Image 1 (cartoon, rainbow, N blue to C red):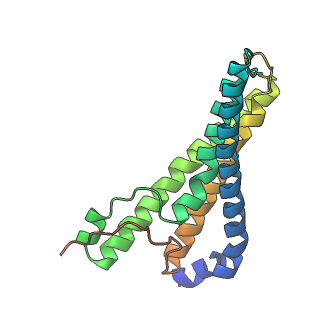
Image 2 (image 1 turned 90 degrees about the horizontal axis):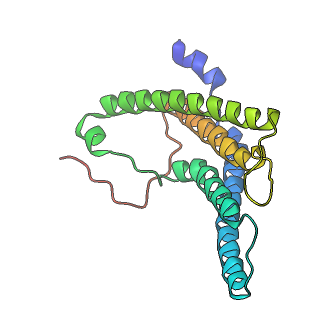
Length: 184
């Protein structure tokens, strides 16, 4: 009965196609952030040879690095790119493995929801108090902080989708390219 009720709320794979596109877009934005850092560093080197410098270049590099990390979280998670300790999971039977996977996903959702909430408050406070960077250029801090919030929201969404897929009896995670060692 509970499984039938849960199925009413479970996202089907066709419904997940939209979020997969969002995760891919987030991955592209992450790559753009990394490319921006490279361009900024090269421009800073050229500027130093010219006897000048780019104002607040260190701040922009730090913000785009944070954006690159947070925006890459959901697609990396779904592609199996995050470190998962499977040695313990594979030493138990399939039922125990599913239960532990389900519990760890619930714990991850709780931690991500907590983190997302506080990051949202942080961004909102930066916006409300009109916090600006302390460099040469006064940039409103809520602007670069939004990439961190967006990445956390998307990561939370990916974990919620994973929870629904585990309830449905499947798993949306792709296998990692690393070899998985199974206990004998």
